[in-house]
Length: 200
Ligand SMILES: [Fe+2]
Ligand SMILES: [Fe+2]
Image (cartoon, rainbow, N blue to C red; front, side, top):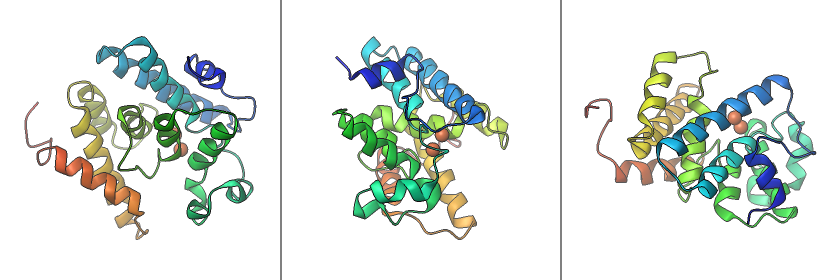
């Protein structure tokens, strides 16, 4: 049995304490719908499919909260993160405080922006879906192809999203977090070189 907050999220309902405006809620719903579609295509058991949807709904629940209000609630190690990354860990902290014990789900939500070497399948899918959801305007063809490929090649698609995120950070001259690099290393070791050269 999942926690009531997680069960509600799986049905598309944000927690009462969520701070997410209308356009954010639309993004959240697109991420949830994409995760639901992938979980169905992968023929996951109903409970796991619900868990993927819950991760999608919860990941940006505090995205529109003022970052400086979130920062003091985070563990010391995460308190120094850039403002735009604080919302994931903040949701994880809040869910844990509310009694959610699913560590994979907490990690999925907490590290949906950075990535993390120990993300489980739900966490990897959320990491990819957040970037690939169809509402994002840039590189629509790249996103469409990867969305379609995910159910056949989830690790390769996640690897490509991780590669792209890291490339964007390098292009902007921003520092890379250790978890992002370690996540990349895990994915790079478990898949052949570029999926775009390898066929289907
Ligand atoms: Fe986010
Ligand atoms: Fe998001």
